[in-house]
Amino acid sequence: MSYDDHLERALEETPDIEEGGERFQIPDPEVRQEGNVTVFENFQSTIDRLGREANHLMKFVQNELGTSASIDERGRLRLTGDFRQDRVADAIDAYVDAYVRCPECGLPDTNLVSENGAELLQCDACGARSATGG
Image (cartoon, rainbow, N blue to C red; front, side, top):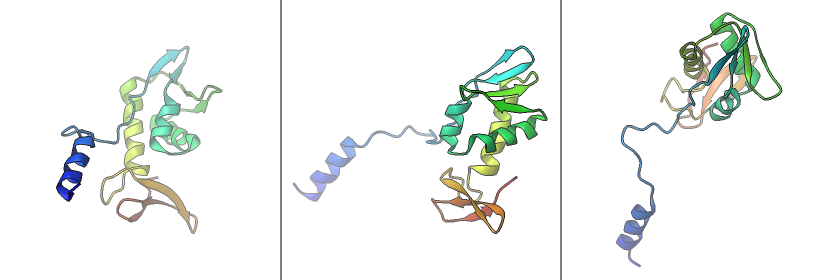
């Protein structure tokens, strides 16, 4: 096979990328009321997608919403009070801006690292290191 044949075959086998689609998608929070508690049903899939610790995200959401929270045995976040889906989604978006997306290149390919007691965002894509928004 020639180079052109290999290239054509590779292009045919490459999945199409949708225009304008973003590869990093966070599931919309699925919330419901249970008495005086708002239950964030898909909290576990959200932290899995973000690649962060459950307690780290829980504490951030607590502070953003001004409430107390706990994680139940099923991995759901239980927020004290009545919170609409859009309010929880806004808190998750703020978390992503502060602790997930690289402020230099905008990609989510980051890790939280601790250096001399400071929490830093280390980007695997561009190599930038920056202070977190927290």
